Image (cartoon, rainbow, N blue to C red; front, side, top):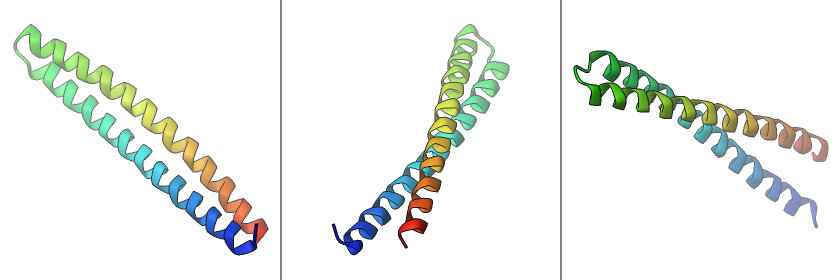
Length: 90
Protein backbone atom coordinates (compact mmCIF):
# COMPACT_ATOMS: atom_id res chain seq x y z
CA UNK A 1 0.00 0.00 0.00
CA UNK A 2 1.36 3.43 -0.90
CA UNK A 3 1.95 6.18 1.62
CA UNK A 4 -0.84 8.31 0.20
CA UNK A 5 -3.35 5.47 0.50
CA UNK A 6 -2.25 4.81 4.09
CA UNK A 7 -2.61 8.48 5.02
CA UNK A 8 -6.01 8.71 3.34
CA UNK A 9 -7.22 5.61 5.19
CA UNK A 10 -5.88 6.97 8.46
CA UNK A 11 -7.61 10.33 7.87
CA UNK A 12 -10.92 8.57 7.22
CA UNK A 13 -10.56 6.48 10.38
CA UNK A 14 -9.75 9.61 12.41
CA UNK A 15 -12.84 11.35 11.01
CA UNK A 16 -15.05 8.35 11.86
CA UNK A 17 -13.66 8.10 15.38
CA UNK A 18 -14.11 11.84 15.99
CA UNK A 19 -17.74 11.61 14.79
CA UNK A 20 -18.40 8.64 17.08
CA UNK A 21 -16.87 10.51 20.01
CA UNK A 22 -19.21 13.46 19.40
CA UNK A 23 -22.16 11.06 19.19
CA UNK A 24 -21.15 9.63 22.57
CA UNK A 25 -21.13 13.11 24.04
CA UNK A 26 -24.56 13.74 22.55
CA UNK A 27 -25.91 10.53 24.11
CA UNK A 28 -24.37 11.61 27.43
CA UNK A 29 -26.04 15.03 27.25
CA UNK A 30 -29.42 13.56 26.32
CA UNK A 31 -29.13 11.16 29.26
CA UNK A 32 -28.54 14.06 31.64
CA UNK A 33 -31.55 15.90 30.22
CA UNK A 34 -33.66 12.76 30.61
CA UNK A 35 -32.61 12.36 34.25
CA UNK A 36 -33.46 15.99 34.99
CA UNK A 37 -36.82 15.69 33.24
CA UNK A 38 -37.55 12.52 35.19
CA UNK A 39 -36.76 14.23 38.46
CA UNK A 40 -39.04 17.13 37.62
CA UNK A 41 -41.87 14.82 36.51
CA UNK A 42 -41.48 12.68 39.61
CA UNK A 43 -41.48 15.63 42.00
CA UNK A 44 -44.23 17.66 40.38
CA UNK A 45 -46.52 14.78 39.48
CA UNK A 46 -49.65 14.46 41.57
CA UNK A 47 -50.51 10.86 40.77
CA UNK A 48 -48.83 7.47 40.74
CA UNK A 49 -48.54 7.38 36.93
CA UNK A 50 -46.41 10.53 36.96
CA UNK A 51 -44.18 9.08 39.69
CA UNK A 52 -43.70 5.81 37.80
CA UNK A 53 -43.04 7.70 34.55
CA UNK A 54 -40.51 9.91 36.32
CA UNK A 55 -38.71 6.94 37.84
CA UNK A 56 -38.65 5.20 34.46
CA UNK A 57 -37.25 8.36 32.86
CA UNK A 58 -34.56 8.62 35.56
CA UNK A 59 -33.54 5.00 35.05
CA UNK A 60 -33.42 5.35 31.27
CA UNK A 61 -31.51 8.62 31.55
CA UNK A 62 -28.99 7.08 33.92
CA UNK A 63 -28.36 4.20 31.53
CA UNK A 64 -28.01 6.62 28.61
CA UNK A 65 -25.60 8.79 30.57
CA UNK A 66 -23.37 5.87 31.51
CA UNK A 67 -23.44 4.45 27.97
CA UNK A 68 -22.71 7.84 26.38
CA UNK A 69 -19.81 8.44 28.76
CA UNK A 70 -18.36 5.02 27.96
CA UNK A 71 -18.70 5.53 24.19
CA UNK A 72 -17.14 8.97 24.38
CA UNK A 73 -14.16 7.83 26.45
CA UNK A 74 -13.65 4.75 24.27
CA UNK A 75 -13.52 6.75 21.05
CA UNK A 76 -11.39 9.49 22.63
CA UNK A 77 -8.84 6.81 23.45
CA UNK A 78 -8.97 5.49 19.88
CA UNK A 79 -8.64 9.05 18.55
CA UNK A 80 -5.47 9.58 20.57
CA UNK A 81 -4.04 6.27 19.32
CA UNK A 82 -4.78 7.21 15.71
CA UNK A 83 -3.13 10.62 16.17
CA UNK A 84 -0.03 8.89 17.53
CA UNK A 85 -0.06 6.56 14.52
CA UNK A 86 -0.38 9.57 12.21
CA UNK A 87 2.55 11.23 13.97
CA UNK A 88 4.76 8.18 13.49
CA UNK A 89 3.87 7.78 9.80
CA UNK A 90 4.26 11.45 8.93
